[in-house]
Image 1 (cartoon, rainbow, N blue to C red):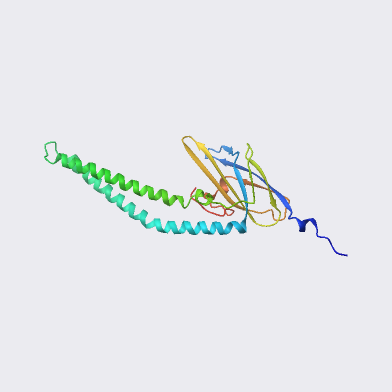
Image 2: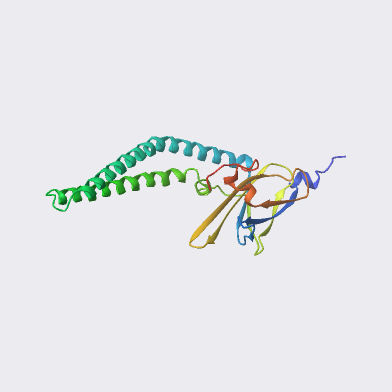
Length: 219
């Protein structure tokens, strides 16, 4: 007699991955993050994307490194020139016929220092982009399934009981006049179980170097 295929061979068995998304502040306050988008990826299909992003980051950082060092040296040189021009201006007497020229030289040196400082910090900002969570989250491929957290930061997502996957989440919180961004991109698996619970918090942010995190970022 021919054996009919079981339900599990016809349809991949699914399980349930539930969890919470929250942040604990330095003051030990617990903030549950609602309406946070949660995306599930196959680890096998996500890996090429992450490898390409990491290679791009390494290339750009190698390109920017010497420019940042040169800009820092230029800024330091302009700062020294500004200090020398300021000293000359301070020590020039009111009756000094070169007083106006000395003052003009000081103003010009100050402008050049500000321009050099701006160029340096612009390069630092550009460099920071390639080590940020935003860089890796910009262009993420189409996920297998998505959901979002409830008002109390909880979520439930369907996931195959077998296989290795990645979970991505990005949240933000306004603190005073600034906005804090949080990124998670962690390995997940049910390992054959029907259910599993997971917490997305400070410990496994991409910036924390967690062993579960697929990337390490500056923020």
